[in-house]
Length: 180
Image 1 (cartoon, helix red, strand yellow):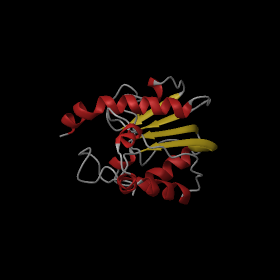
Image 2 (tube, one colour):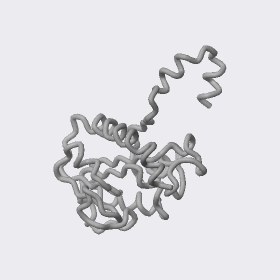
Image 3 (cartoon, one colour):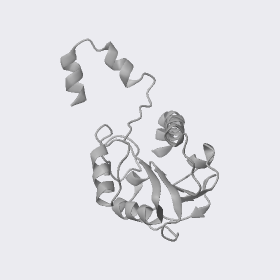
Image 4 (spheres, helix red, strand yellow):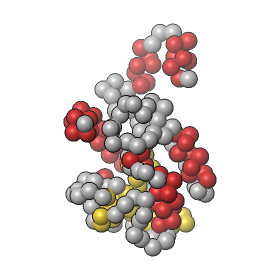
């Protein structure tokens, strides 16, 4: 069940997400921001001032109750659209990406995060996920919508980083197999 999943993984994942989000936004000025599926409000929590948070459930960061697939906003209204761990919960993820693109200003930035579908298969992970996406799946969808993917970053939330684990592995052939 979701409560068990959240109690085991949620705290560590939340901290790591905030850390990565701060890194990605460092030095950028965001005038108007939309936090899609905001829950407790990631953007507000890291100090982005002019943020509208939408979600279908109540939460500290929710400004407007709305679906991530049908945004109640005018075209090109936001400088920044953030959807952290939302896409995998949706019935129509491509429709959602199209709508997020619609509300983004022409020179705006969209940041989308989702669990890596290569690492987290459909049978594992959060029981509320409807599908998983490999990083390449997201890049292809964004390119088809006319976006230029500037950066793609994997985050690791374990107690020991992937780099440290790789240093402990003695044989190069094992490392190559793990990377495939």
